[in-house]
Length: 117
Image (cartoon, rainbow, N blue to C red; front, side):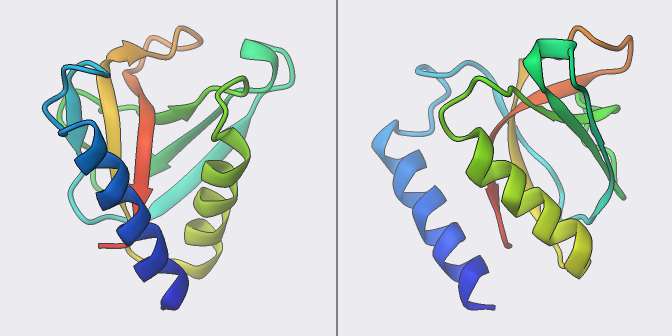
């Protein structure tokens, strides 16, 4: 899929710019190749945060992942999650395991990037 190749290239470029050492953004974990299985949007929590789950749990992010409504890239990442859910295509999630969503006792890690593996 062309969209996936573009997204993967953009993510690689972005990760290369910060060195992907984790220093600039904290501890980054990478999900296994997985599928988005569930999305939940909240009108009040965080002003519109979205959480989503995957078919294969990621260690440290066993609940899944979350998108902060106020993040600059929220709209583009949300559209990617919706697309991956609808198409059932494989996805890889890059997330900050130390930035957990406070709306649940489950561990939902803050999304840093999304790519088609």
